[in-house]
Structures are given as structure tokens and as C-alpha cells.
Length: 192
Image 1 (cartoon, rainbow, N blue to C red):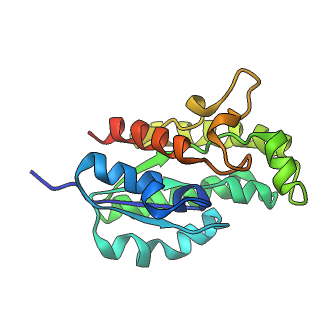
Image 2: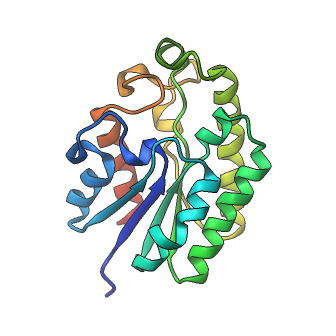
Image 3: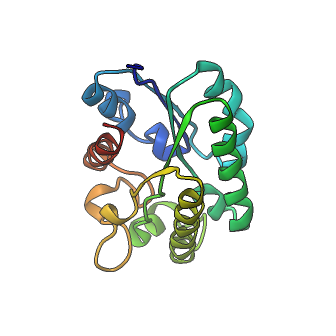
């Protein structure tokens, strides 16, 4: 039996912005799995940035699985969703070529009012939320075509108003400790 080795590549949601390292979902997941889960999240990163560092940050370490979470920052910068999907697809293809199982984590929704209060200078968060739904739908469709596993992190954090549930967020964009534990639980159930 092959021992599980997981590397997570992404942006600030993977990195665990605003949290102590032991509170981040990757470390919570590692404790639950009983294996090291390597966090290669970079705050502010885009899908192009993730692609550019994929070889050094993931492939060279030869994990069995790579959890890929990204795209929100691309939407903040108003990049075309087709380009984001192209970058994410290329990441998945490069992983598969190197016998690494890709697992896509769907981006969590934004809690727009809280995000406006904390990050209002950045963007139109209502529009980003709409685009996140489109992006997530395209990731699911792509993944189905190539039998890639997808972890739905969008629905469990979406409230009745179609936005992020404030109880799980630090600032409207980033998840708090409870949100990170919930993410770890969801991903754990996919990997075991």
C-alpha cells in the first residue's frame, strides 16, 4: 500500500491567512490523516502564479496527491475565467503526467458585506461571487471530463443569501479557525 503524501497548492485560503500555523486546515488535515500535509499556499497568488511554481513546489516532492485551490485572486484582478480554467487544467495535466493525483477544491464564496468592510478598496465582491460560481461550475465540468476528484468547499460555506456564512470568516474573504476545521473535515472525507 502506498503511503499518502499530500501537497496543497493555492492562495491565501490554502496558506491560512490570519491564522496560527497549527490552526490552518492543511495542518488540521494532516493531524486527522496521520501524515504530513505540505502547505504551498501563497497569499495573493493567482492560477498563473500557481502554475509557474508547480514544478518546484509540488512535482519535485513527488506527493501521491495534490490539492489545488485557486482562482479567487484571478477574479479580483478581473482576469478572464477561460484563462483561469486553462491555468488550472494545465496544473492538473502536469500533475497527472507525473503520476500525482490532482484534487480540485472549489473556491469558497465571499461574505460580501464583511469583505467590503475590510477590503472595500479592492473590488466589487458581489460580482466576484457570481464569477466564483461560474468558475466552480467550469472546474467541475472539466474535472468530470478527466475523472478528477473535486471537493465541494463552496456549498458548505454558502448561506441562504448565496454568499459566505459570516460565522466562518475572519474578514469576508478568509476563513477563521472554525472554517479551517470544516474545510479539513470535508477534504479528509474525500481523501480517505
